[in-house]
Image (cartoon, rainbow, N blue to C red; front, side):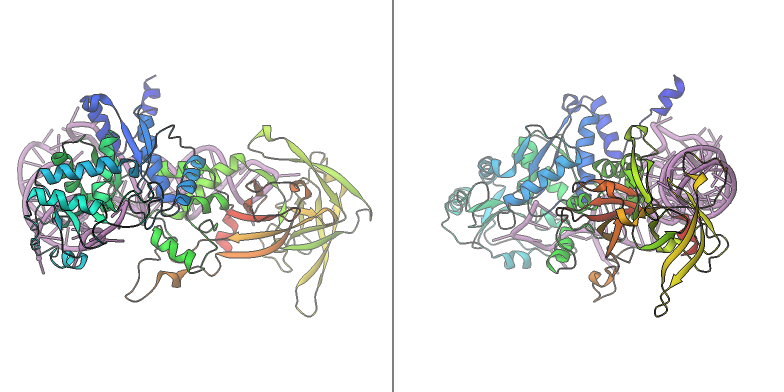
Length: 561
RNA sequence: UGUCCCGUAGUGUAACUGGCAACACGUCUGAUUUUGGUUCAGAAGAGUCCAGGUUCGAGCCCUGGCGGGACAACCA
């Protein structure tokens, strides 16, 4: 009992510790409300998955709920198309927002009222300065800014002008509403930030109703307040926004949500910024947002990653304020771990070479038992066909193998998985290329798997596929997108795209056992001794395409390159 | 040359109100294995950025450095 409680002692991240303490102090009556706030202007990536796991996870852990809220305050960049893909990705990851699907745009009327209130309190003014002029008078992090000549307009005039802005009487850029805070603040965000701008662009949800739209800083925290969000969790780059976030809570006299920042996710050998990912897509460096090399949720899904593997990954990486970089090997470990338990095994030969079993009957054929998943007895077994001619992996044969090569070579013996032990007697080479074209072996009929009475031991076991039953398939071998650990650690003038791994995708023609016929896009398998593969949606009819999700761990390859 | 945040094995996260620095991945051994996978057993690897201070005792507290990051979009 004692040890049980020790074992179950949960490790809380710093945010959970804060919440736990708040609950002990009965803050917010112990209520916990979070939100996941994507902007519908692009696709979700694994960094967002971290945020979801945090926001939904924390809510669940403390008996609260997490809202889905689209931060759609910039109609220029946003579109309903993204709303749908985002929802699909969240659902796929296994998170449920119930009926709490909100949009910042649903709050535009109230946000407008908030702005009016701020003006009435003399805490906001309409500025006629242009965007450039505002930037020019903003100062720098080390020098104070200059106050706008329009800063001290009377409240009534501000009210009228703001009203006219709303009615579309001014053109974009002619006027903006600014909070009146402190142009000399060491925090740039407090130097009279623009909180409303004119944008005569139809919004994907509110249509042509608005000519003005609130800025992030005047929408996010206010939406949090409207939804009574108790913890507004965001990434580190918003840290310097927090004083403004709190200033607006105080001056608007609204529900005091607490913003807490954590470090965004970085992973080696990839990039995780919407801008960079967009660059890869637009530049044709990858085949779209769901290219299996992309760290997007849709890319990972197509690659064969499971929701559980991504959630486990998020658990393992933790949450903290220090920004660092996670080794992609941890992500790969997480899929292997999950797929090892769940993916059925099949035999697939990536780079086939023919083996003729010379003492096997010419027309012979037999059906052997093959277990589907040694990690899961419930997965059952299947029959696989064996015959005189089989394919094995080209790399499983060497003309002159080193001592510790446990595979096939002249005079060597191996077991064929689920079948017989064979001994290599000869091979044929293409005189022109030197490539091995055919291998000749004898099999021992007394060594059939499950019925072996010889007690014979061999070092190696090979996967194989019967030539006449083989199913030809396309296989897309994926590898890390970037050859550099940190593709963004660049010299002046260098470009991250120069470090795209030229071998990140290799398409090959392979063969697999016929049992996979009829498999559907998204189905996942382990090719014995090779790795995990997932059927790509590009597959059509009898034409299967497999994406390699991850290789198996390979301690032999690691040592022998 | 301003303000804020951060600094614990190779990487990432822990260490309850100060009490022998732990876990995971990675690395390396060995065992088992009809997947060179899985599983199992084990090992190496940090004395917590540095220097002072408080304390019986500091990764946790204080001071000063050093290092890294963020901030000057009518983006989020």
